[in-house]
Image (cartoon, rainbow, N blue to C red; front, side, top):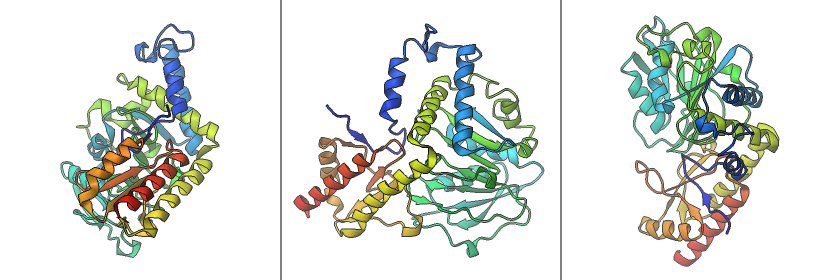
Length: 361
């Protein structure tokens, strides 16, 4: 029996090839006699795993040598506090662009540590677009400019990076579109995110931070969350999420076998165009995000007659299409079509939606 297609926003589907490899190695990793979950994080076996994972991520993203890659814990929500604790230095203000639910949470959390300035966007939704760049209003001396490159809940994505004031580092939450396309890491001061969408299981957080930003931490920042300390200890200051790093490493190797990020982007564009193309061609379903800012990863949509929502979800599950219910704050439906979702999965979804429209329209 074929596996269902899982459209969960996160924790999300992993490549089947990766899952099978992990299953084969579960009891005995490479003749070590141990599962990765049983290894010392300081032993030679896990050191090899972590070193290779970091090297592969650096290769995939072409991370410059003057950036550290950190494997941490706490998810993107914890980073909303960890970032100001590390990057404010002697400044009291940071600029935030709010384009959806997650960047609104980031702004709210920052209030505990500084005076966040709303450079663009709105603190309440609905969020349907990235604000035009001429409307951005920066503060006089911000420590950094924060944005969420892809809003998982609202389906709004930056397809171009806004220009920040000179010498102001851009900080980006890339939880849900990291590794979905090539990016120029050198345009950012810091990139971070939870791994559970395009990288691996929940519990692992990645941080990519420029070296010159490592000396700004507040004395109140906990040692385990101080980037300089974590970097100096090779992400081993405390016990890291070892199994999450292992799975992430398998995903990085899978991405390289697929042809890297240029090929992955090509596939992601094809999937998104197929789904949005159908949504634009029918009145039975609606998608509300403005076209230039539609996410390639997370596609919220709504049935025109929302009394059919439960019937749609039940029929989709019977058809092997899982976790299509939209976030509770937005409602409707949401199809998350991350790297691990094959084109065949989106084709199956569109075919199902057409048939449901035929029988219920």
